[in-house]
Image (cartoon, rainbow, N blue to C red; front, side, top):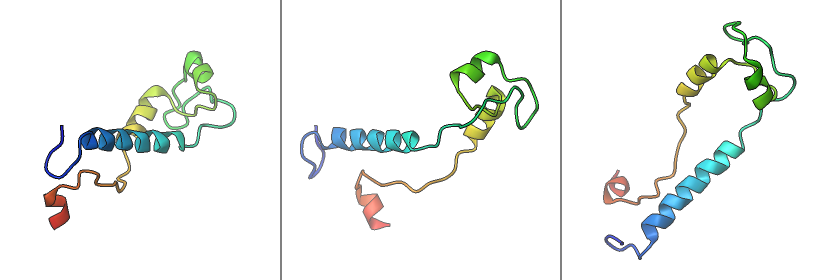
Length: 89
């Protein structure tokens, strides 16, 4: 299904390209290094052993990591839609 001047499958290709870009960005993030801490670097709560084993080099407890993840950094993206509105701005 295509709309306007787009060829068949163009929308699916755009979605797949966006997903691929995001996966590449996530894989490029540096992994924790060094030994895992026994207590969180921010709140000093104990980090469960299962978390320390699952994520080598972990420095934050689950709650602090979730809070940090919520504070996403705004980053520029590529407008793959190519809508008329985006072209007029």
